[in-house]
Length: 292
Image (cartoon, rainbow, N blue to C red):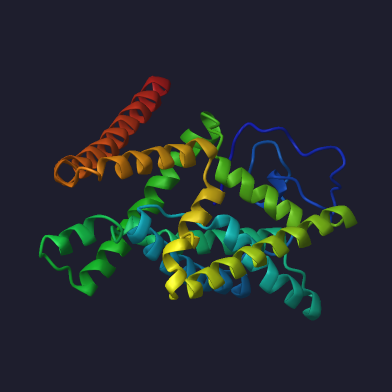
């Protein structure tokens, strides 16, 4: 995930050597005004690990998307998993796992993990199945391949306009770059923060796994959903509050099931379509006005 925006250059305490801690820009994100980091990037281990993590993310996003309608790119998770797996291996082999390799790992993982959404497996294809129209597996594969190629071409055209010239904030990319910077830190305090972050990820994984096992028991109805709880952790507060508001309104409306069945689904679908179309219109208007 390469990004570029008008963020400040590296802080003065960041050293310039290849093994020194890197800033957001030096983590391989290509932010404006930052020196290019040294080290290996295109390696078999980083790409292979990214593809492996991407398969897990794709399955996770498919399940989460069909269950909740939401999915996550997985950049943060892929960064932590890639570092946890390859950094110790690199130290044992005497070939350090570099920030650029870590960035390639999360980029490949996020690209593979996004395929359920980009290929229509979370919306269009399930909708066709509900309408009685099946799509063969080879058709889905060809469709996903074509969309992937078109997406890469379009992203290449839009990158300079949206990330360099307009300097959009790109919060996911910035957060991922900061995480890569922290994971590859050389100072003791930063390294301790890196280990703490990995420990929290392990705790979250354990809670999710145990909750899933417990959901098969009689206490399932009293347990929170690990997927919904995880989404609440990674989404902004306003989004989580809005989601709770919608769920609360539906709970009240279900006291009158006849009217609920007739109106709630249509209202929800209309809200989703309206936001998507208006967002597309506003974005297109902004790009065209700045191009003039």
